[in-house]
Image 1 (cartoon, one colour):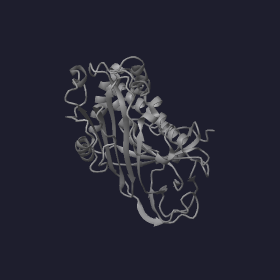
Image 2 (cartoon, one colour):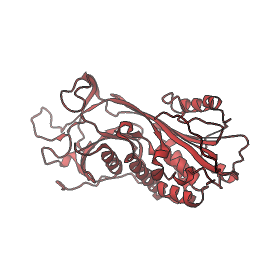
Image 3 (cartoon, one colour):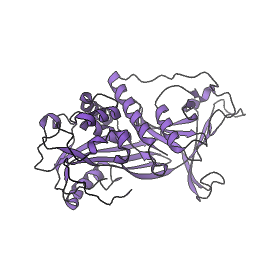
Image 4 (tube, one colour):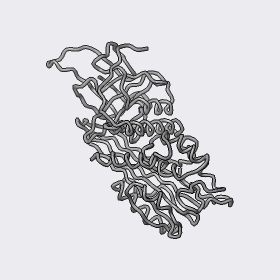
Length: 399
């Protein structure tokens, strides 16, 4: 139920093309978050989307159609959209997104595809895991400033091509927090011992809002960072499952609407919020935020979400799916993401390396490998989203 008149805050003007791919990336992110185990609920759709975009146009048949559906744009426009997306993010001091392509020396890649790829690393692999790991690990380590030192997938003798993206986000808060250790006496972290308890008081009540989403009321707190990156803390009602809350939050954090803090008329206008009148020595409203610092890492096998990411058909190794990449029949053999995020008193940092490998698309069975798998109190589990302010892109999302 709407308690107050919804606001429509001013949004930065964006070209239609950028607005289109930003919405497409965020939609893919929300759909993927619904499928992620809450224990590993940290993911970057922006790490996955460009890779899917780069392989959609050269794909054929059902695989091309599935990739287009996952991307939310036409395949023939996907590579140009990926190039524009990467260039747009690289113009932001706080965000870096790089790509890399490695092939076996005897794989002849069509110039019509390779020449359209974004500028990035070009190299060769050998198909020998230990040798390739030296090169790929060094690339991941360098592109993420040491935050992800190990490339998320390993090559093997069947690997013909590796395509990867590396994302690095670093921002400092416009207004930092005060940090102190605190043991909470209630809630799910009550038995966790002292946690990093972060507090701050600011004066812009409109940094917080309540939005009615598909799963009920959502409290969206914007923690403003420098260099065009913000982090949204989103708290749902206690009964809402993490996957639903994550997906709902991803759908609303970069869109206008909701009831802003200056328009709150109820004592408890949304989850975690208390609004009240009191006496003070200065005529300035205050927004008090309490939350917890966190550091989180996760790894994802993207083929476990193949239906959402458009990888179901193209990972069928019984035939090739990418005639636009090479004459040799190729199929996606593996796709993985390694990701980390840290929210602390001074700022936020996150890094993700996403990679997919292609193998020979033939009828032989695939080889199997062992793999690794106002007052606002955010003092129970909550969702968070790092967003690129000019485009509305969700860069990293987590629980």
